[in-house]
Length: 241
Image (spheres, rainbow, N blue to C red):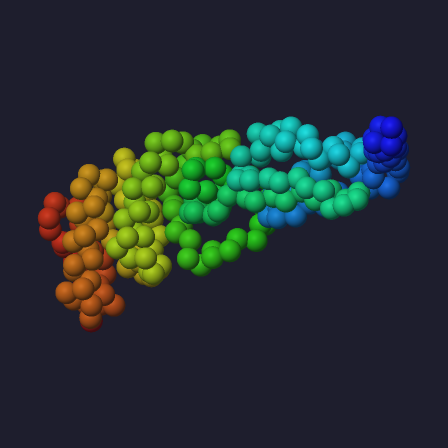
């Protein structure tokens, strides 16, 4: 009898506690904070979660729907986490994709993630970490940089070039310039043009270039340009005087 009475009392306490939890205003969302935004204005993220304000704190249990919606709207987001700061504060943590390269055109400077996502399409002045180490790419037409991501073919070409730069010259300041018909020129340390030509045999061209700099390190500052367009040959022109 006592055990049965104790069980009934326990159920009553649980019911009262659950009712209090559900009805007490203290457990309704009073504030929402957005953190981690750089390329995406936090005000835009807020519009997607504003409807949660005033709802019960347990709404966080089904927040995955909002997370999925926000990620679909903003491809620049890598991860998003909506969590409760007990009892009534909601925190939205945004983790954006990392910067990879920058495409500099006549009209814009597009910061690109490694998967081709254009990161700075939502704001004109993001805080970009490591900008001085980012590879800058010129000569791309603006119509190739429309929408949420760059053209897949352009991305594959860029990956191939950048991977060679990172492998053979990881700590050097090198820019890439696309000329017509996919001809490439590298600009090393802002002053030395290196004519690569087309993408064919580009790995061999980078390897030969590395060997040249190792063999003749003293010549770099005296060169007008380096030409690698002829297979297995390096043509250099020294400055006059």
